[in-house]
Amino acid sequence: MPRYHMQRTEREITDPAAIETILKEGVYATLAMARGSEPYLVTMNYGYDPDERALHFHCANEGLKLAFLRENPVVCGTVVNDRGYLDGKCSHAFSSAVFWGHVEFIEDEAGKREALACAIDHLEADAEEMRRRLLAPARTFEGVTLFRVVIDEITGKAGN
Image (cartoon, rainbow, N blue to C red; front, side, top):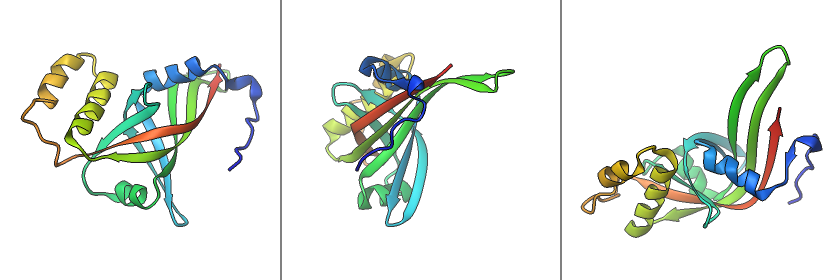
């Protein structure tokens, strides 16, 4: 499906490394999904894996987002690095990435451990301590669903 071109081309980020930095520095991604003609939007924290070109998410085993994603695994999402409103300039300092991709559910325990480790490494200042606590060898992951969004296409934009 052809995408619309960016209206403010002077704000477009075309450097892949700069777009990747947005994903590495971000904390939350907002995912848009649909089933039939019904839209749904959810914001979640994530872990970014540049080798897989994927964002890893975790959630409970049941819920509306899972019903949507299982019916239609195609998503669009955004990560925004907000540097704040510029008072007196009627403007905002930010960088953002909009991505299109598809969801892959992670079913095996080793894959779940890797996905959760990715999120821990991405979000935690003391990742080793959290890895010890949350990825203990005896720990099982029956109570959590892990999935990745593999990025098929991505664009970037920045303001001020």
